[in-house]
Image (cartoon, rainbow, N blue to C red; front, side, top):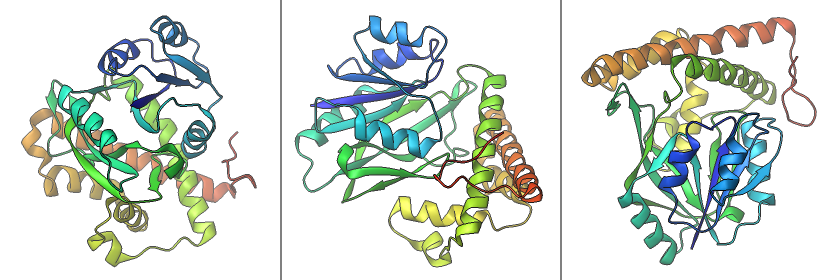
Length: 283
């Protein structure tokens, strides 16, 4: 009743646990960005269908997958290799797929884990559109893409567990160093396009996806963003209640934000422009 889509790139450590958590589906697709470890071998041995494509940017990669991978079922659940489906979430998703009403997508609550605990307060955002009809979903932005459904969205119970530091701190830093490049390129591209935002929507828009888009656009126009990011996570969202994990995560998030600031300045000074195809130019 539900097909599963797992995006991978050198995920031999995390993939087995992810596959275990979605073993209730008989249509599992591993969408791989040309891994050079045992990811594809593990996926094939576990009966998953493997599709490989070189990675360009997040929105383009995800949109290609939804448009070209042949899913056996009308509903698709998207999951990363460092995430795990809980039994309650599995039951909720199966029930939603059986009786979706007029919904074309469902929002799921994710719990980020760090240093052995749930980042209950310092987590950036807990809700993500992960169960959907593929023909009704598309993505925008080069990194941290925004999910754009073409119909009503529902919310289902249960939790998706996320282990972003499963491969260690060095891997998290390297990955976010790459992410910050895409974020800087996205900022420049938005400025060139004259992308507008609404303060009213950033604060009061009821649709979560729309509100998040305008919040990002507002945030990127603020001075002292790294300090604001730390204050927002650690103070306003009460990340201090998450103990050492909350402090460490808030600091790492502010450092990531500083990477984006520095790279945006660097791209501006070099006169960087996006490629005509919409895929960012890189050295």
